[in-house]
Length: 102
Image (cartoon, rainbow, N blue to C red; front, side, top):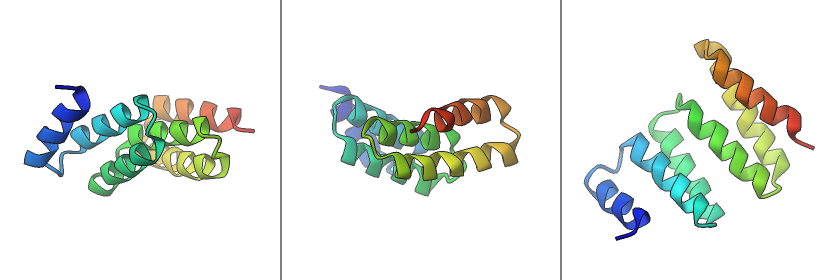
């Protein structure tokens, strides 16, 4: 059974688990299914709007898809949240991604 299948089965039992949703988004991204990955990142953020890693990885996914305006918007939301949470390491990572956008 693939990791995608395993995560799908786990999510059937616990569809509101933010880590499983995030993990599925990462697996979908790795499989090249950008649109499904973005929907799954959105699901993770719907469950936990404070989950900084989802903002960063969603922004990264959008950047890799050359959807720069969308990436900028997501990363700016993540940076604002990181600043409010006092997560300086995450803020630094997200700021670097923002600075690298064309």
